[in-house]
Length: 442
Image 1 (cartoon, rainbow, N blue to C red):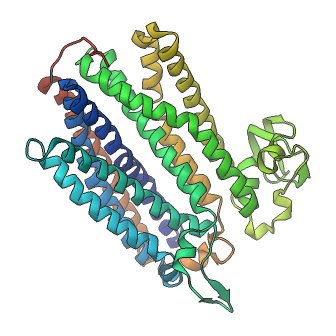
Image 2 (cartoon, rainbow, N blue to C red):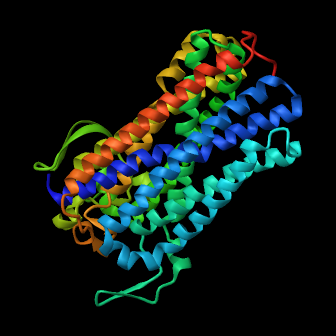
Image 3 (cartoon, one colour):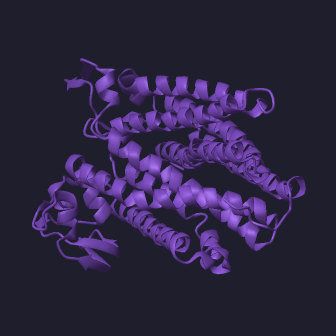
């Protein structure tokens, strides 16, 4: 394997695993805190039981997120020293602040896990909220650093030198808000549907129905509300990308030719040689309207981008279609769930609705991975958009291919261990907690 390719694959693989651990770690504390709040208000033991079960999950993902994140920090320094040499002083602030947020999160989690029956009940609950807020801030700060790579700011690039550095301007770059919003909502969608799906499966199996029904409802509400908000954040992101990174938008849509009244392409197989998209559904003018607010607005195609600056079209387009397709499927399921809550309450006890949630369990995380593929692959060939190329930033270590295989094995092992720990935690619930099959009144 080529060293340059191995370095990029190792970084991609590490990020692909870390993003799942990080998103669950960001969101689960809010699920836990809401269940805890209901326990304090109602004194129904099922809410206490759900809180304690989820707190164990939070601890597991905090540990795995910390491990996988530490590996990434080493990889940035070892595999991308030229990038870090120049970029570090510019976008280092969000990473420093993320470290502070992580430190606060660790302290608050310690208070929370060991504070049962020792701290004031509401102070104890507040420490759980702090875990969630600090975790969420950690994620937003890391995304701000990534957004800087898509929208460089806070410096002047003169004769190959990075001058007049302004870390505040770099952190609050033009892309940070849209990326942070889209990523945060995606974390709630993916985690909400995954957790709801697991509990739906346990309900279908008839195991500790009272416990799992309560947990399912909390997770489902978070996931479905976030799913309905995601298209709005996606629209904000798309408009921002159209303005700053027209090459990325063109690759996402497989839009080869600059034109007005540009159609929105759904599906299809891009043919880069013929510059066409076969078997696609086209909605006339919709892409123009979505990006410019005018059905006759001009949308830049790949023909306006120098060939050496064009992203890989097929990978970016397919990843974008997967993200959007799964996102809309989850919106559809969310609307069904809202209809059940509002008008069709008998659906809430039906197996078919629970089975749909079980099928949706991995959808959010697949969409999440696809979205990050769009973000990273769509920026190529740049690591700092318009400033530094990826090929100029990487300095692969000798024998990096072996390192790639080693780290791949480590991450796969970590994923297996986490899965086994969570499976053990879920199956133990039925042995530890009340196995009543009555769903408690909410």
